[in-house]
Length: 157
Image (cartoon, rainbow, N blue to C red):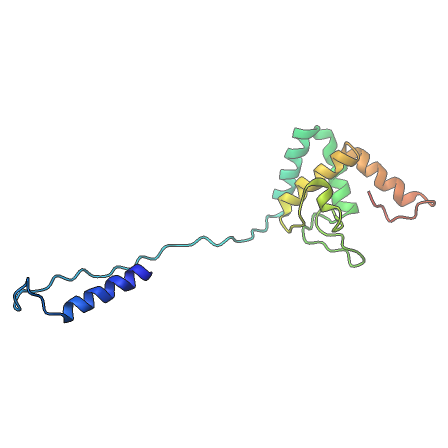
C-alpha cells in the first residue's frame, strides 16, 4: 500500500514539474493504478448433521476395534452422555460436548476443549481407549457406577 501511494505521488509530482526531455505539447503517458481485490478465506464453523458425526465415529471405531463395539459407543453417547450434541453443557459442572469432558479431562488425551464435533469424537475415543480399552468396557463401567449404591456417582465413566 505504501509503495502504491508513493508511486501515485511521484506521478502527480512529475505531472506538475516541467520536464526538459519532453516538449510541452507532447502527451505524458500515465499508467492507471489498478486495484485488485484479493479474496480472504475466513474460517467458518460448520455444524455437521448428527448422522455425519455418527458415521465418522463409526468408521473410527471399526478401524480401531471392530463394528461390534459400535452399539456400546452409540448407547454411551446417545443415552448416557450428550445425545450426540456437540454443544451439550452440563448445568452442574464443566462437562461439555459429545463425550461430556470436564475442563480438566481434555488435556489427559492431548486435546483442547473445542466445539468441533469431529475432534470431540477423536478425543472421546482416545479417552475410552486409554482408560477402558473398549467402548464396551466404558459402558459397563458407566452402568456399574450408576447402579452401585456404594458409589452414587451419576454414571461417570
